[in-house]
Image 1 (cartoon, rainbow, N blue to C red):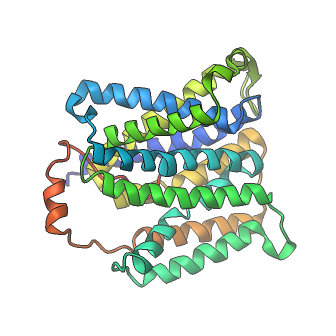
Image 2: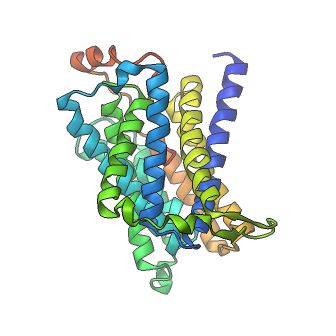
Length: 332
């Protein structure tokens, strides 16, 4: 691998992590200024689906064809791996500091490794157990359990639930990409997520007038911005752009290395929240955060590559050219 190709991949992965980190804080500002978690996840899902499906139509129109057998999988993937991840995350950041919410969500790679070990009976490296110990110990420090429930219970449950849903996203994503490229896979999945939330919160009841209201920018940022600008940021720069950057980075570095660089997201989000939103962590929580990140890194690298079956090898040949596996480490 050439040094320039590696450097480009690292920059792309860092760019994606930064955009994801900023997105968490932009989302919190939107949620604190009149947009509910259901409304925000509905707009994000619909906007992202539209953009990704248009990209699919332009680059590979045949990928828009969906067989009857695949339709059920895409619907399930959209409802669990996309809809639940986003909604539970938005609920969590409404009630918890952004960095802590992301930290609990980012235990997903650990859940995936445990699933592979105990359910799929797949091979994992012994470092998984050290990673589990670090993650649990670090989370105990972050939550400060010895003081009782210092974190909002609903926020904590939502963050852990978002992590479990994110683990489903990773596991189902590996399966889905045996039959189609990741851009169309995400486009259809976000589409089914949009359909779900349109049923739960119908568009005809949507408070579109609220989007024209101007909200003050947080921290030292001057002036204000219409709420629709923040929603547009969440869709374009907080979802579609970093997702595509991840795909380009994976093509140059591989999913594991990109996933490890993605650990910058909870750290960066916490720093941005500290500067702009005034969300500070105690020293013991910062130490716990570092320990959790070490545990996640160990879990990220604990899964051993298994040899694909003949059927999987045959299925992999029908993927669209240039498709790359989703990295285990960056939330959608």
